Image 1 (cartoon, one colour):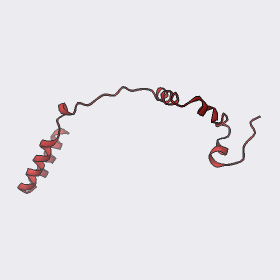
Image 2 (tube, rainbow, N blue to C red):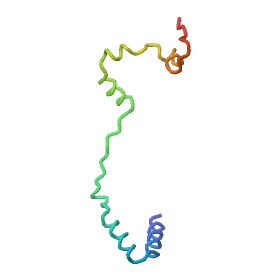
Image 3 (spheres, rainbow, N blue to C red):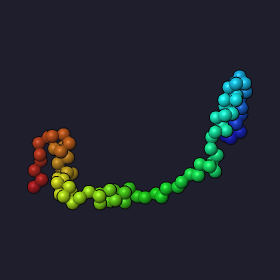
Image 4 (cartoon, one colour):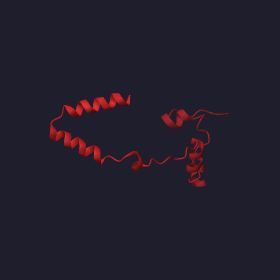
Length: 87
């Protein structure tokens, strides 16, 4: 694949007029090398840990304001349909 890519790039550059070739060279020279980029590897965390971290920032008073029957009454809360008795 790399050889095909190099050939394709070379063909494109060769078809350009000289002033455009110099522009291409300038752009390529400005690109950082992989060593200069220094890709930072972020630790992978499970989604539930992230959710726990975010939910820990919400005050208890706010959690107490939320409905406790959200799964049973989702149509009521989302779409305004009549509330369903859960008894």
